[in-house]
Each structure stands twice: as C-alpha cells, then as structure tokens.
Image 1 (cartoon, rainbow, N blue to C red):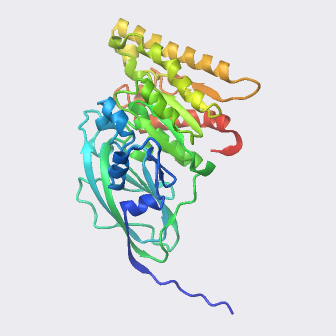
Image 2: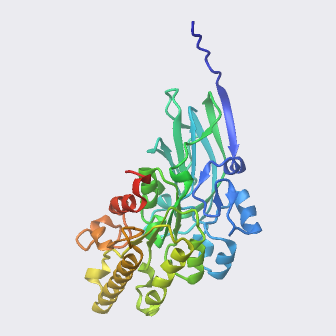
Length: 376
C-alpha cells in the first residue's frame, strides 16, 4: 500500500542578495555570468555587486565616459528567477537612484515586475507604501517566479522573504543554450524607454518568447558607438546573438559624420572577436521629426537612415557566404513608420504596443539566425 507523507511547511525562508547572487538566481548582470564575475569586472566592481549595487558597465568605462555614471546604474535586463510553492513573498528594496524624465512616469522607470510563470502578477514600486506581503497562487503547485528589475532606475534588493513553502527555493530551469545570452546594444529604446513596466520592453519580451537569457546594454541618450564600448560589447564571447540598434543619438547636425566613422568599425570589432556569432542590425524607425521637422533635419535623418541600411546590407552580403546566414538586417521603418507613430509615446520612444512591435519584427529573424536551437 502506498503511503502519502505530507511535507511539512516551512513558515519563513529568507534569501539575502548575496545568497541569491552566489546561488545563481540572478540573471542579466553583464559583469556576472553563471556564478562568476566577468573578466572586465574590477575589484571595485565586484565589491559593489556583492553589496547589491548593480552596474551594467565596468568601472574603467564609467570613469572614461561621464554619461555612464547614471546610466550604468539602471538595472535594465536584470532578473531574479526561481521556482517555489510559497504562498507569499515580501521584498526589501531601496531605490538608490532615479532621474526625473518628462516623457516617462516615475513608476514606469523604477518599479519591479513580479511575474508568475511568465505572466504579470504584481508591481512593486519601492516609493509606494507596499503590501506587507504579496500573495502568490495558493494552489500548492510549484511556480516560476520572476522579479524583473527596473529599466530606468537603480535599486538595491536587500532580501526576499518567502512564506509557507514545503520546499526550499530552486533555480528555475535553465534558459536554452546553456544560459548564453542575447546581447542587446542600443540607445533608450533598447534600454526599455518608454514601456510602462520593465517586462514589457522588447528585450525581455524576446527572452520570454524564446526562453533565452539576455543582457541589456541600452544607453539612454547615447549609444554612439565609441571604440571602447565596441571592445566591451565584443568581450561577451558567451553571446549567442548580438542585436545592434543604435545611431538615433547621432542624428543631430552637431555630430556631423560621426555615425559614418564608427558604424562599420563597431560591428567589425564585435565580429572579429566573435566570428561565429550572429549579428542582427536594426535600422532607424520613423520619428515625428520625419514629418514635422525642418527640411534640413528631415533630410539629415533620412540620410543617416539610408547609411545604416546600406552599411548593414553590405555587411550581410560580405559575411553571409556559402549558404551560411550569420548576419541579418531589419529596416526600422517596417517596425514603426510615419503612419504608425501612435506606437510611440511622443513620436520617438515606443509605448507598450511599440515594444511588442519591435519584438514581433525580430522573431523570425532570430529564428533564422539561430536555426533549430530555438522556436517561438
């Protein structure tokens, strides 16, 4: 006769940030991968990380480029993933930094998404008077819990507290391809502006769609293809794919031909270090400036858009030989064009529907580049 032994409940289980980090529950930190600090991480970077202060760019780049001081602290792409049958969770989080932006609510910038089995469950905004506990599905089943960190703020998670669980927390099943990530490099759109929640930014949507890890190196207001940044991106030898969506912050007339000087050098730096890793180029979408800006501005934007397209297609032609498809290109105006500016907040940054349009446009391209390894 089979005897069922009911497992006793563990009333409370706490995990500090350091425990979560060292037990490999944390994903998406560029300077930390599979339980080990990156070779780019200095002793200073490691000390900050172990204290719960996350940076997406190493200290030597933060010292060289002043704009990274703020943007590196934004936790875009960082997630904590685990499985549990706990009935409730409590988060101890502090907002360390957030910049006020006119086109982006404070909550959208600094809130954390709580997902259950990949679906939205609750929002945790450290500046609110939050619930003492956030109750999880009370069905006795084990669920995958994802804590998706803010895209445009710096937070410090001190600990999570789980209630009424029968088992200790387990790591989520690994992402496909041994947790190797898609590396996203771009400007504010890549970083997640202006999605209403962090899990609605297109890099996260793609990660959920394909069950693939990702690292977000989006840099709001910048992403100008500096050679030192190219070297840093190229350093991710564990990448399964590089997605390059940049150039929008070199459209101002003051930048002259800086885009033309840097675009090819940027992708070649990455390709030379990672000759077998695919690259997906994303061109410039349409902006409101395309239809309502001064003629000189409109002409310059179109010139830069055509330049990116020409360079990306030339790169694809050069690299894709003998039936091998390693590079591909998406025309940004097929994602958001001048007749679909309602997919943006203010004629530039995508809203939630706009981010989904970005993700949908990339799906087939990613499947083609990664072959049979993933399916939507």
